[in-house]
Length: 145
Length: 183
Image 1 (cartoon, rainbow over the protein chains, first blue to last red):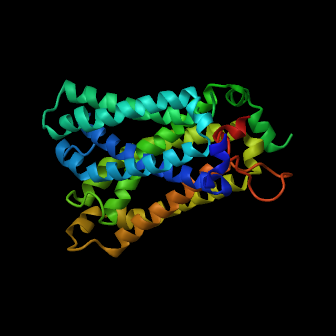
Image 2 (cartoon, chains in turn yellow, blue):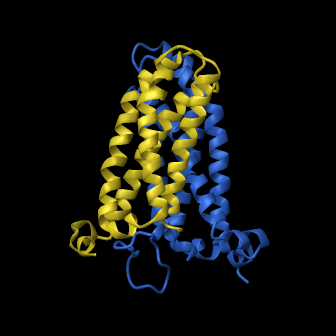
C-alpha cells in the first residue's frame, strides 16, 4: 500500500498507459521475432533461408523486445505490488515467463541453430509458440481474475 | 434504440459482454495476434528501413510473411470487431476508439499507395544498389501508423465516457483498467 502511493509512477495518469504501450510493443518484438523462427521451424515461412540464419538475424531483436518488457513490466508491477503479487494470473504468468525464457535460450536456441529438421524441431516450435501465447493470456487475465 | 444499442443487444454479443471468460479470451487472442503477426509486420518494416534482416532479400521477407500477415490481420480484426460490437454503446462514444479506426483507415491508404511501388515491386528494390527512399518511407510510415493504432487501442480502456469530468481517467493505483469497459 505504502509503496503504491509513494511511487512517482502514480503521479501522472499518462505514465501507466505509456508503459503498457511500451510493454505491448516490446512483446510484439519479442514474441513476433520468436514466432518467425518457430514458423520457419514448422516450414510455414522463410523456407529459402535456413532456420539458423533466421534465428541469427532475429536474435538481437528478440533481446531488444525482452529488454523492453523486462523494463516496463517491473515498473508497472511497482505501481501496485500488492495487487499483482496476490493475483493468480500474474503468478502463473511469471512462472511461465521464467520457463519460456529458459526454454528459449537453451532448447529453442539449440534446435534453431542446429540445422536438424524433423519432428523434434517442430515440437520445440509448437511448445515455444504455446508458451509465449500463454504468457500473453496470463497478462490480459490479470485484469479479469 | 440507437444503432449501437441494437448492435450490442444481438444475442451472442450480449453473451460475450456478460461472460467472465469469453471476453478476456477474445481480448487475449487479439493481443496474441498483435504479437505474432504484428511482429511480422514490424520486421518487414524494419527490413524495408534496412535495419533488420539485412542479409535477406526484401522479396523473401515481404512474400514469405504476406500470407501470415493477412491471416493474422483477419483474426485480429474479427476479435477486435467482437470486442467493440459487444460494447457498441461505450465504444461509439469513445474518442480513442474512433482515433484507432482513423489510424486503421491510414493503414488501408498506406497499402493502396505503397503496394504497387514497394510491396509488389520487391525484385526491383533488391536489384537497387542501395535501398530506395520509397521503401524506407513505406517502412517508416507503416511503423508510425501501427504505433498509433496500438496507442489509441490501449487508451480506449482509459476513457470513462461523457459525464465524467475532464480528460480520460486512468485508474493508476489499481491497474485493472484493461477490463474497465466490461465492468
